[in-house]
Amino acid sequence: ESAKSYREKKAKPLWAKIVKVLRSVYRAYLDLKSKFERLQADYGREVSKNSSLSERIYEVCAERDSLKGKVRDYERVRRAIGLEQADRILEAAYQQEQAEKERKRAARQKTRVGAR
Figure 1 (spheres, one colour):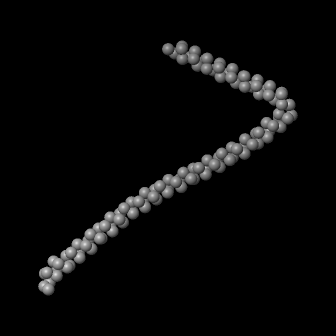
Figure 2 (cartoon, one colour):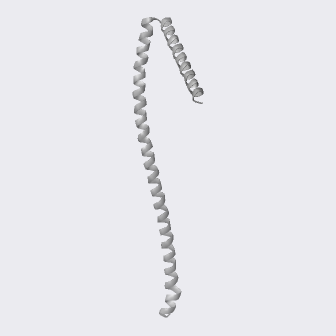
Figure 3 (tube, helix red, strand yellow):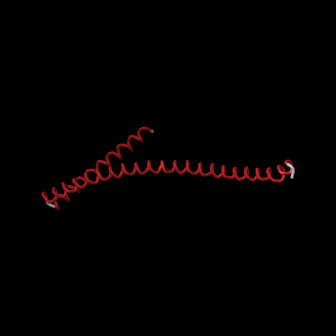
């Protein structure tokens, strides 16, 4: 077999197959690299979210502890002045707040009407 026929019948087809396989391997590599980078970015975002949620949990726990102390104080006051008296005081304060809100709302409406 001559060198030219060997090159045409054996070497070139083998070389073409090798190139085809290498291209497919390179394409698979690029796909995996892209997927890996995307997953790294997703992971970074999740770590950031986790950090934010951890901070929020810490804040909520601190607020909860503060509120527990206020509830204990509130219960002490209720026991000291009596349940009925505490309820009357709370109702009076609630009524006063509602009246104040209504007064402010009416004042805002007057200002809006006067501005027209």
